[in-house]
Length: 427
Image (cartoon, rainbow, N blue to C red; front, side, top):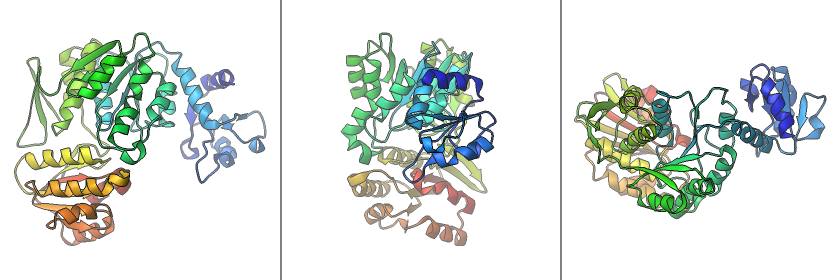
């Protein structure tokens, strides 16, 4: 069945799972959700230009353009794995609690100095996004960088089975998706499923920051080839420019700057330089790639708006990234500092404790104004009576319309579900 589907894929213009974005001659997959049956949209997909629709409900089949499978999602994943196996090139899997996307983009840009690189777009890093990423790999690609996200144990195992990486990097282990993983130990077990997968490959290689002792220990125990680096010391010197949120670094005698801010990005940069070096990218080319990288997608973005300088880091948040962002922001530069912090989601029974910890931390930092937003941030507000608390983003927006912020350095940080970046329109 997969061979037959793959032959159709080779004649197509690619795959789609969304009738709103179908391109002519796409193969469209009817992926069901908890509240809808995508098979119902098969006719619409064909009308919009799909050449084949992959369905898993025989009652919707009408002619040979309807390709019937047992499960459309499984068919998509199997097709992606089959396509991946046509390429004898490095496949680098990247996962971790924090910094996955930034690291992926830095690694992509560094490796692109020498190779034709295909990398995950945005955050298409789950059981649907990874297959879609693999199926976009074209002939002539020399290197694939695949980001892998997870919110529970066995997710990384599944994604590794689909993408079959032969190189791996885990950025770190932090307090992310604690509810799904069952606590910090569950996060470690879940993320290191990548090591468990690579352990079965004869020539697998992993990259490890030796500062992450548990990752180093497990990697050395399971993987025959471990390439290590250490951030930010040894060959790297790093400091913050006081006048602007940039990192200033020295690597083996070469001075350079990055538009990224915060010491937590040292490791992201160093990992990209390490991986680039391993694959033969010259240090100067790697440094040039790092200097040219400008973050977007609400991750460590520096935005000048009116008289304000805004550090927008609202793509996601967990206790680890929230505390690091706060401490970094409070310690850099001068002037009036204001923070807007939104709920950290998916923490399960740890939610109250972790939000209280953020509230307590905020009392120790030199911040001029603190705005806490969302039903969970009330626990942070209990620990910091001087903070402004807003149960909803709408309440905050009404406040900002009445009292706009000016001449300030601003940090905006929160989980994706609260979309705190939308308050930018009111500054």
